[in-house]
Image (cartoon, rainbow, N blue to C red; front, side, top):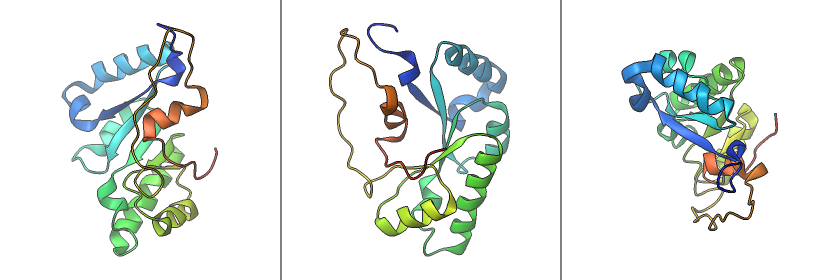
Length: 158
């Protein structure tokens, strides 16, 4: 616990562009913070040019499926296959998946059927400010993923 905040309640999102300059250094940094209890999500997966290298070398616990695929997956079979493939790869690597830009119940139901673990977007909840954290020992606990995924609805538990 540091300044009244449990480090296992902190989840950092890291983008490919932030890490791609030096993957080895980024991986070391991530592991050091993980040893302290922090968690990491690989953000916007599928949008970059080196996504699979990024996925393979950065030891994150969560994989966020880029919203550009999720948003139109019910109308575009290629986007649907991309979301399904990213979800399957994430699970094969032991990562939990988070779908971005889930705007309605139909998307949420389809993501649930595909086995995506978490959803983020206006269809599951509006953005909201965090309550002020004080030094009274406040913990995020089970809300740790909410910090990571914009307070998204739990689709399934792993």
